[in-house]
Image 1: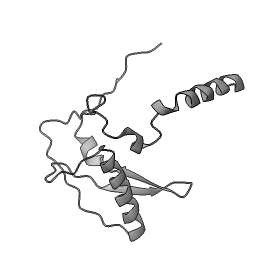
Image 2: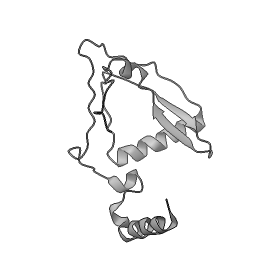
Image 3: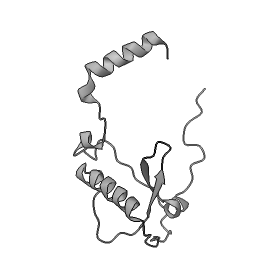
Image 4: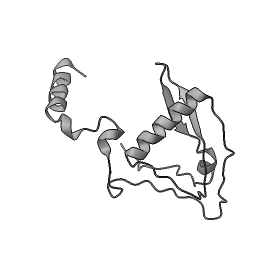
Length: 122
């Protein structure tokens, strides 16, 4: 990006900074009608519940903080009887912070693959 274009982008972002979500705390109560992800799970697939993993205290605190943040932003909700249960994976980033991911390996195996998700774009 050239210096002139970069300056224009920065100016626009500063001018309209209130319309941008800088974190999950800025998107409280996001309406599911806006964006909702649904999985195309094969009907004959049996639900898989992964064995519960235990974490050291440091990682447990990171997980609790992240889950609390997502619950507060209403991005996730607690359920009592899940059909599918996937563990979280805690990974240390190069900057020393922690990243929380979910191990969806078993769930991904039951979804049909779309080998051509987009039309040919020339």
